Amino acid sequence: MQRRKFLTVATTAAGASLLPGNAAAADDLPALVRRYVTRALDAGSPSVVCGVIHGARTHVAGGGEGPGASAPDGRTVFQLGSITKTLTATALARAVCAGTTRLDAPLALPAGFPVPHRGPRRITLADLATHSSGLPSLPPNLLADADPDDPYAHYTLDDLASGLGETTLATEPGSTYAYSNLGFGLLGQALAFDAVDSMLRRRVTDPLRLTDTTTTLRPDMTSRKVVGHMAGQPVPDWHDHVLSAAGTSMYSTVDDMVRFLGAQLRPERSPLRAAIELTQRPHFTADDNLRLGLGWHLSRLSSGRTLTWHNGGTGGFSTCAAFSRESACAAVMMVNTYSEQTATDPRPVDALTFALLGELDAV
Image 1 (tube, one colour):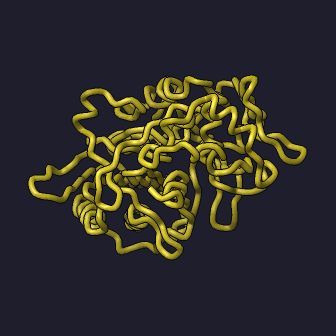
Image 2 (image 1 turned 60 degrees about the horizontal axis):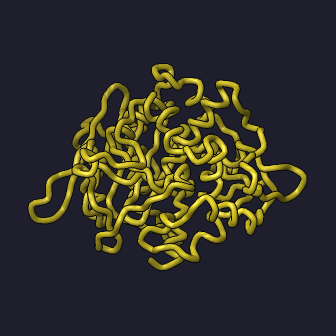
Image 3 (image 1 turned 135 degrees about the vertical axis):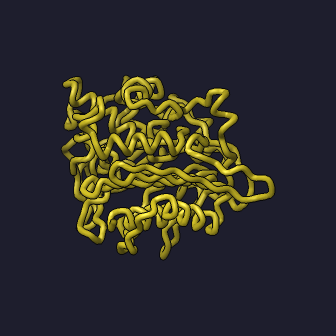
C-alpha cells in the first residue's frame, strides 16, 4: 500500500459535505435497502450488507458478486474500522457517569509515557474524544517499520512510549478539530492501560449484547467473515493491540451495528442510557457544519434534523453508520473493499449511507 493511501485509510472520517438532499420518500423498506445494496455492488464492492431502522421496523439485506457467491447477511463479519471510536467514547461516558473520571480530567498515562503539551492547558479526555487535542493523526514512529498490509501489527507499548516523546501538538488542546487515531488510541489506554479490548467488552459490547463486536475472532466468526479487498485483490485483516480503541482491529456485523444504532435511537431502553445520551450531546464545535459529540460527528440533514454519524475503514473494509433520533431512523453499511475519498467525491459507502438515511428521514 502506498504511504499516502495508508494515511488516508488510517484516519478515515468524512466531512459534512457528504450530506445529500433528501431523496423521494419510500414506503417499501426491503426494496429501498435492496436498491442501495445494488448501488454498492455497482460501485465495486465484492460484498455488501446494509441494515436500516425506520421507526419500529428494521431490515437487513446483503449482496455479493461472482460465480457461486453466497449473499452475505446480518451475521457476516467485517472489520469495523473507526466506528469503534463510538464504542470507546461510550466507555468513557460510562466512567464519567459513574463518577470515576471527568471529561475535563487531564490525560494521564503511566510513567514513561510522556503526554505532549502546547500552551497553558493540558490535553483532557474530552479533547481526545472530540478530536481537539492537537495530536497528529498517527504516532510519528508508526510507519517506519510498518507492514503496508498490516500497518499497526508491529507497534508495541514501548514504541508508543518512544513515539510520544517525539510527538508535538499542532495546535493548543481544545482549540481546533483535527481527526486523530492516536488521540483515540490514547483515550483507550487512559481508560484501561494495556487492557483496552477487555474494557470495551466489559463496559460496552457485553451490556449492549454486541456478541460479534470484538478484536478477536472466534472460530464461528472466522467461518462467517468475508475477505477484505483493495483494488480488486484480497488483502489481510489489520491487527493491533496498542491503538485498538481507535478502531484499527475491531470486527463486527451489521446485526450488531443495527442493535447498537437501536440503542442510540432509544437510549431509554438501554442499560447504558446515561452514557449514550452523554456521547450524543455536542461537546465541541468544529465549524458551522460540524459539531462533535463524544466520538460521534453531528451534522445536519436537509430537513434540518441532526444527523449523527461515524464512518470507518481498514486496508480491506469500509463502513459507515448514521442515525437521526428526531426521525427515528438509522442506517449502516459494510463493504469488504478499501475505498478512498477524493477532493471532489466521498467514499461510495459514505455517500450511499447518507443518501439512504436522507430517504428514511424523508418518509
